[in-house]
Image (cartoon, rainbow, N blue to C red; front, side, top):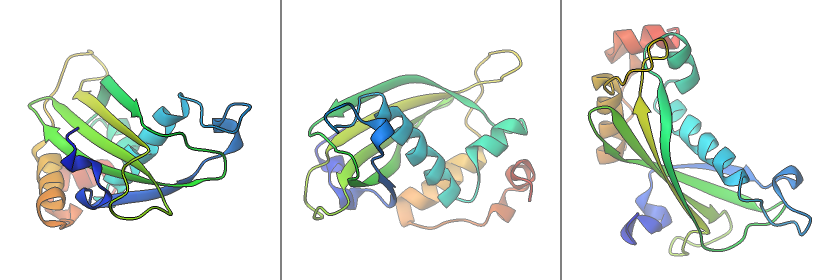
Length: 168
């Protein structure tokens, strides 16, 4: 991620999370594996914000993806009971891949405070039954583009196949 992307205001979406004891080591500092859980929270909530559940559309065969790469940069420790602000954005959509950028900030920090951690995760669309890759659907491209470019959430009704996979 570039330095520009490392400020809270460069992300339209955020979700709060509290650091729980089970996510920490004996010193009360978050264990490195906890960050992957927070990545999933950020990913799931980002797409819920756009109107659909990644779990539901995958279960209904509309679109599923697999993590193929995760890069985590730990910049400062987080501690038990600390409130975090998980900020997320889609940095890139390729033909079959999507890159999610997550920056973790202290919820009590200011708008120009640097992140405590940054995570970049690459997901590749795939067919669960064959294991082959699949393109990112145009509906997801449009929803993400409208959100990232203008902060606009498009009605899911504009995308009948996605809406049906969501159960609407």
